[in-house]
Each structure stands twice: as C-alpha cells, then as structure tokens.
Length: 607
Image (tube, rainbow, N blue to C red; front, side, top):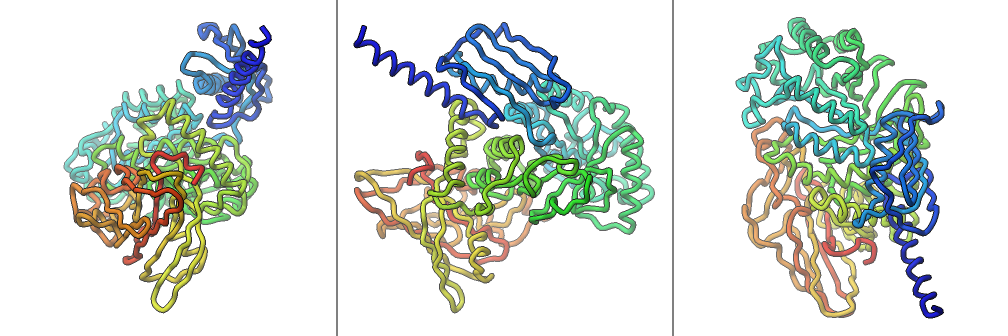
C-alpha cells in the first residue's frame, strides 16, 4: 500500500493539473472561476438544472455555472445567460465526457460584441451564415451585423420593386440574382436568436449603391430615390417586425451628396417610424445624438472624445481583411476596447469586428480562411468580453520583446488558441499557427541613408516599423537577420512571407516568376539560398495600383497568393547556430511592406 501512495498522489496531481488546464483554456476567460476539487467529474448531462431566478441586478448575459459529480446547475436572469453557460460547458468537456469540478460566475464588460460580413459584395448563403453564427456563439459574440447591400447588389427580397433583384442591374460575376427571401432572413434571425445572437441588418444608404443607380436611373439621395427607399424600408419592416429586428444600420459612409444633413434626418426619421433604433458609420454623413455611431477609422482617441451619453461601437481595431491573419490576433489582443480605460459606459457600447471582401470571392468559406476569421473572432471575443486596458508599450502590429509581460500574456493566449484549434476548429483555423517574438536585426537602405534597428516577431510589419523609426517614404531595401540554435542537424518547416495583400484590394506584387520570391525577396540560411515552392500561376496578378471599382478587383484571391495558406518551405539547419537572412524591397506605392518567417510546426513561444 505504501508503494501505491506516491502513485496515487501523482495521479491526483495529474488530474488536478488537467482540470486547471481545461479551465485556463476557456475563451473568453470567465470573470470568476473556482475549482471545487482536483477531480474530473462525469455528471449526467441530461440532468442540467436551469434556474432563471437570478437577482434583478444581474445583467441579461450574466450566468453562474456549477459542475458537480452528479449534475450541472445553471443560473441566469435570461435565456441568453443560459446559452453562454452552455457554451462555457462545451469548452470544459474533455474527449471522455469529463469536466472539471468547478463553479463559474461570469458576465461581459460590453453589451455589444459583434461580427460583420459583407453580403452585398459576396453572397454567402444561409448555410454558411449559420456556420459563422455557430462560431460567434461559441465565443459569446452576440451581434451579427449583416451588410445586405453594397455596390454590386441589393440582397434583400423586394416585392414593391422586384427590379432590385434583377441580375441585369447587378455587377456581373458577383453572385448575380442571388438574394435572401424574407423567409430566409427570418430563418437566419431565429437561428441566431437561439444561439444568443441578435441580427443587425444593414441597408447601406445613400452611397455604396451602384446597383440602385443602374436599376432606376437615379440616385438614392434624389427625391425619387428616397421615395423608392422609403417603400423598401416599409416593406422590410412589415416582413421583419421590430421584435425580431429592433435596430437597422443605415450605412451613410464614403458618399458626397448635396444635402447630407437633410438626407440623414429623413433616413433616421424613416427607420424610427417603424420602431427601430438607428446605427450609422462614423466617419459618415452627420448622424444625430440618438443614432449609434460605428467608428471605423483607425485613429487613436476618437472614441474617448465622444460627447457624454453619445452611443457608439468600436470598429477601429482594424478590419480582418487588412492584416496578416497570423499577426491580427496580436493586434486585437493588445487593443484597448473603446479607448480610455477599456470599460463600458453609456457611450461605449462595445465593438464590431468587420470583414470586407471588396475583391470577388469565388469561395466564401475560403475567403474567411484567407482573412483569419476564426482566430480573429476568438481574440476579439476575449478583449471585448473582459475589457480593460492593455499594456501601453504594445503598439498595434509590432510585437514586444519575448521577456515582457505583454508577450508572455500573448503567448499564453496563443496556447489557448492552439488548444481550441486542436479540439474544435481544425478546419476553420487550418491557416493558423502561433507566432513568437525572436529578435531581428533590421537594416533599411534607401537613397543616401542606412539605418539599423531591432524588431521582434516571427512576423514583422515593416510599414509599422518604418513609422516607429521615422524611415522616410520611397524606395527601400531591407535586410532582416537573426540566429536560430538547433540541437542537431535537421530540416524544419517554415512559412515564408514577403507580402500580405489586403483582401479588400488587389494591389500587390502578385505571384512571382518561377523560382523567385515576391517583392524581390531572398531567403538565405547560413549563406545558402532557399527557393520557394513551385507556382501554379507564375507571374500572375501583379497589380502595383489600387484596384477598387476596377476590373482587376474581379480576380479572386487564391491560396497561392497568401503565404499563410501555402505549404511551408523546408529549411535545413545544422547543429548549433544558424544565420537566417531575409531581404526584400519596398518598390511601389501602396505595397504592404512585410516579412514573415514562421515555423509551421513550432509552438510560437520558444525560438
């Protein structure tokens, strides 16, 4: 028996460690969580006791969850709190159906935590929307902003003006003739509601409406256009009542019209006459103090300067389509929601993470991979559920050194991401691997100057690095050098990037000629050149100019154009120190100046 005691103690310790690890892996992290014992328990999941008797001062999304040896207890004020408790429970369950013996009390900082998809430019369809709604619900993201109209098409069934659904007036190649019937819209709203999510439809007006001009021969902001739009809004609100859809987003950005104040006064009055709250973009046409403004420009301090009580949501953390999907989680993780102290207020309602695919997407599910939807969404969910300030010395897309508290915290979060990829999201996160913060020596050489600086990260945003160190605009050559120590002679696999095109534009160096890297890039390890994989379309898609509203925008991105979607490159390393050197050029205006050397099979933590 004495011999068994150390073994039993070790087993108990191992079980306790597993229970704590499972608890620590939750995304988003709960406010309060307490392990009641070191046991893993297997309660009867058919005996979940749900009580909607929480105190009046609990918010609608607050819940408590107790997992015991025999049964599970959930307490909340509303069914939405119950949904979130069940989502936490799903993350706690291991492969054998066991759970930590735990008590959790949890609630969000911000009441609005949303995701936006642009259906006007790229029609997703009901089944794919449901998949994304499931993903949102898994991470307690509670608002789906459904951008239903944009330049190519109006995606809402229209009985009063059926010509709006006529493919003749829509942009060719952009899912012409595809729209959602009112039955389908109600179906999506009901599906989302069952999963704790409210739908915010967006009818973008009066801009982003090329299809409207083509259909009627006059603009939305004209007297004739406003009459048509008023009829369409009235029909939508009859079919989709206020209890299903209490708010409508009216867009209003990126447009110049003769009477902006008059149009907005009319649009807000029209929407409110149907019992709906208004949302609008900012910057945009001038909204009144009752409209919830959605701030989209990445300018520090805009939200903190809001007038008292002026409602707003924050989308200025950056769009998913603009950034490298391996680096975007860091940008989101280090972001302070709504500025200031990162806390909710009468003005600061929360945030909405947006994905804009201005470029035609041949495969909408693939487009979500190209922009890193799953990894971005779970990181956004963590920040806007928890709130609070982040470290002041963690700017945007430049990683801090590995020995800082900020990078250690991000490394721990990436371990949680890796756990979720393995357990739940192998397909949705197939593009993703964790990144670390190795040190690089970076030398910029331009017209009559040379400057060397340090940077950290498997992915380096060279545009941001230039801004930090006041590197002047214009043509540049950059060399990045670092050392990798290997315990033995081996071959390791790396994802290598010299470009990261934004998926809302076609401007990039495209696919290089066979045997070359983008942007005149080179990769050498111990002085030996490393070649890229073979290209299926060498020399294609080189557009050194912005492609908005141009024919080039109709070329969908393929995996081959995005380094995070490509197969890793094999890199031979010798025992001991190995010198890695990347070079590339900044050689055209609008280039995404960028370098990546990411170990595909690594942890992203140790380098």
